[in-house]
Amino acid sequence: MKKPILLFLFLLAALSVPARDFKWSRTLMDGSRTGVTAATANNVPEALGTVDGKSYKAPNGRVFRCGATPAVAKLLLDAQGAMAEVKEVIAYAPEAMPVEYPESALSNWYADLVMKAVEERAGKPVSCSVLNFGGIRCDMPQGDVLMDDIMSMFPFRNQLCYLELTGKDIRVILQQLAATSWQAVGGIRCEVKDKKLVSATIDGKPLDDKKVYGVATVNFLLDGGDDIFMARNAKELQIFDGYLLDIILPYVRQLTADGKPLAYQKDGRIVITGDDRDSVRR
Image (tube, rainbow, N blue to C red; front, side, top):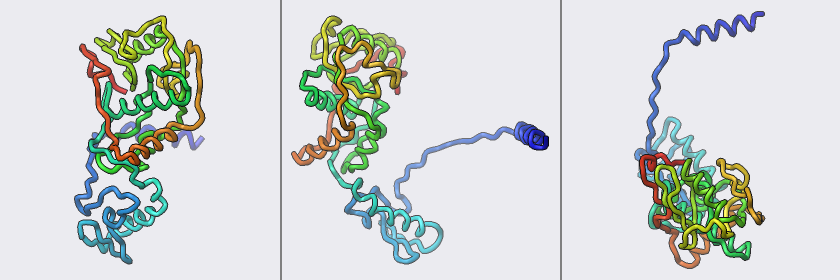
């Protein structure tokens, strides 16, 4: 009986401790003390500095000979060899592309790229795509884009899918997105007001409830991922081998091989007005 009594006394003591207020703040890791920046595979000494024995020389010229700084720097530098592959520069982005709602340059790029990739694999026309914002895990940085950036952006093992859905079923999905949280779409233009779908066009024409459309998505959304059921009532479904990253990395590399930057734009495909326009978030 000792353990229950001790547990009771511990809980009683914990409840009697006065409440404390905690405050959190974000601090930008800008290398202000050392001049450290994000390293690529080819600029480790310039970006991270060097260690000589127990002395660490930072990129800005400062030398640290005591404390934890040299030891931590050595650990970081020693790890760079194993990270060289993912630190390869594979593209250049003239502008940062943050994830923004209800649409952003990055989400539009992602949605349109998936449409194109699915159309190539299915051998059939794809009129639109529906993808979840949660599948994009970080923003596109400005400047050199590393393989690690793309891998961090799209880390999930999602497979590309082709579906055939009636306009009526697509409308149900769009109405759900309008009422809850909007997602990344391609080939679609919508107007939403007060969480209600006001208008929707696909291929530049009003959504036709009776027409059958080719739709691109990922397998996560087929049966309930993020409360989306893309496969419900699908007249055809194809799930392709390989993962999303296997599609995106070669595409990004080809852009660079063609001498093109990694850039995209908003185009007003989703317009949200009314009292709830600021509440549409992932």
